Image (cartoon, rainbow, N blue to C red; front, side, top):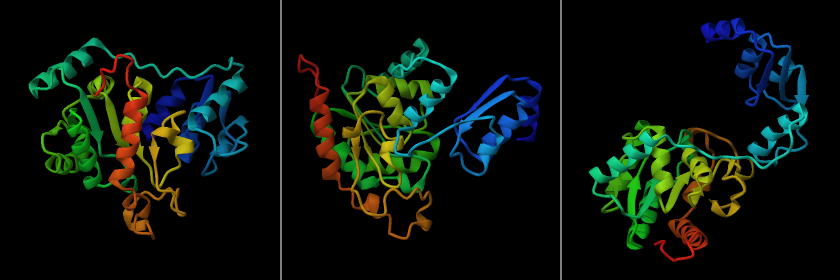
Length: 278
């Protein structure tokens, strides 16, 4: 970190915008020696003291995307709807298609399950993902279990409980995963990066939420894509299961039937006019 701070200091920036609002990001803002350093007035860990200009936050009950757009107001940018377009390189799409061919999935309609995420408490159950996978397989979709290398244990367990599912966890780059999500009929996730990726790519997504608030970080402008039980202790923003005093009830009480009902709604809502979707 010291080396990177020195590098930032030598780069002679004029303007720094700190969207994270924590001590670490504030140190980079200070190290930049920029004349203008902008951050949220509500930044944590004393980070606000590093800024020359502070964006007021009237309420935290706004999506992160909308909060970030407030910086544009301060900088004089015209207000427009955000553009989440992801332009995939042709080689990523080609590699994704080659992977599908290798697994005998060329030309098949796909459902992608992404059961991993960084926080322990954001994980919906393995049995739940497997039940959704079996339901989607029963509708004629080929089920793929995807994720990064650290998710391999969970992915393998889901695949083992979902006959016919193909586990490709850890086999894709980020671009290839995006190409697969773009190609899919539906994507089912926890609160995670692939969830936001599906929104950006226009793929129907259904996501299990527990310790976090979907109003702040859920699928942007898609409240219908969120499934949560609404227990009184949620959202709590507790990351580790050992720190949860309520037996992870926000996720353990979220049933497969609840997710499947929302999946069915998503499939109907996004069905093409020609009825070609599964």
